[in-house]
Amino acid sequence: MATYSDPPAGSFQLSQLINDTRYRSYTFQIIALIALFGAMAYLVSNLLANLQAAGLNISYEFLGEPAGYDINQTLVDYNSQSTHLRAAIVGVLNTLLVAFLGCLMATVIGVVVGVLRLSPNWLIRKLMAVYVEIFRNVPVLIWILIIMAIFVAVLPQPRDFRGDNAEASMLWGMFAFTGRGFYFPMPVFGAGSGVVGAVFVASIVGIFGYRRYAKKKLFDEGKLLPVFWPSVALFFVPAILAYLVMGRPIGMEYPALKGFNFQGGIFARNSLISLWFALSIYTAAFIAENVRAGILAISKGQTEAAASLGLRPNRIMNLVILPQALRVIIPPLISQYLNLTKNSSLAIAVGYMDLTGTLGGITLNQTGRAIECVLLLMLFYLTISLAISAIMNAYNNAVKLKER
Image (tube, rainbow, N blue to C red; front, top):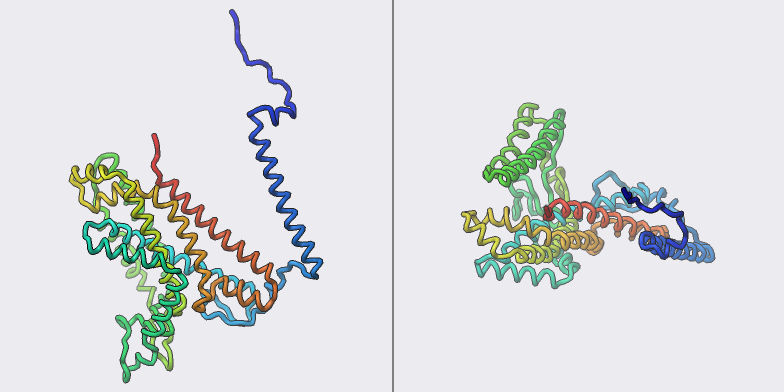
C-alpha cells in the first residue's frame, strides 16, 4: 500500500524572506517599522542638537515650582502657591469636565433633532433643519462669544435678588442664575451615605440587567415585558428606601445671598456654562445629521414590515430602526466627540481655565518652557482622543450586526 506524507521541511534560508510569500509581507513591515523608528530618532536627535547649540535643554523641573497665579474654576484644592503641576492637573480636570458634559448634552440634543428632522410634521421638520443649518455653518468660537455675551447682559446680578429690590428670584428657592455664574444645591454626605450610594449603583446595574433580560425574552420567546416603569421603579425605590432606613444621611446645602454674592452650594462660572452650552448645541447639529443619515440608511420596508405586525411608531424606532442605524451612526459620532474635546481648547476666549489656558498659556509664558508645555499638551490631547476612540470602538463592536 502506498503512503503519502508531507515532504521533509527544509532548513530556513534568508532568501525566503523575499522569495517566500509566507514571510515577504512580514519582511516589508519590519523594514518599514525600522525606517519609521530611524526617522523619529533622527528628528529627536536633530531637535536635541539644535537645543544644545542654542544653550537650551528639555527639563520638566519647572512643574515643581510655585505657579503664582489663581484659577477661577477648580474641581480640586488650588491656590497661587500650588505648583505648576497642580495647575496643569486643574486644567486637565476642567477640560475633561466640559468635554464629558458637552458630549453627553450634544448626544441627547443631536439624537432628538436627528429624529425630528424626519418627522411627518412639516413645521417641526423645517425648524430642525433651520437649527442644523444655522449652528453648523457658524464657527463655534462665535457661538461661544455670543452665548457668553447673552449670559452677562441678560441674567440679573446678585444684588437683584435682594428682598427690597426683587427684580429676580431664585428658581424653586434652590437655583440662582446670575451674571456672575450659576448656583446649584450641593449634596452634603453624612454617616451612612455610602450605603445609599451603593444601593443606587446596584439599582443602575439592575436596570441594565432587567432591560437585557427583557430584550432576550422578546427575541427568544416573543414576549414583550414592560421596561419603562420597572426601570423607573428600580431607579428610585431602592435608593429612597435605603435613604429612609439609614436615617436620611444625605442633605442639601442651598445657595443663599450673603453680602454682595451668593454663598454655599455649587458655583459654576458663566464661562463654563457658556462653553458647555455652545459646544453642545454646535456639535449636536452635526450629530443630528449623522443620526438622520443612519435612519435613512435603513430600508423603508423595515418600517412597513414592523408596522404591519402592529408595532407602535416608538417601538419601531427603538426595536427596529435605531439598533440597525447604530452601525452607521457610531463611526462619525466618534469623530464628533473628538472634535468637541479639541474645540474645548477655545475656552480661553471666555476666561475658562482649561489645560490650554493653564499649561499652554500662563505656565508657558511664565517659565518660557514652550517645547515642554507643547509636548505635554500634545500628549494629553492624544491620550484623551485615543481613549475616546477605544471606548467608542468597543461599543461599536458590541452593537454591530453579528453574522451567523
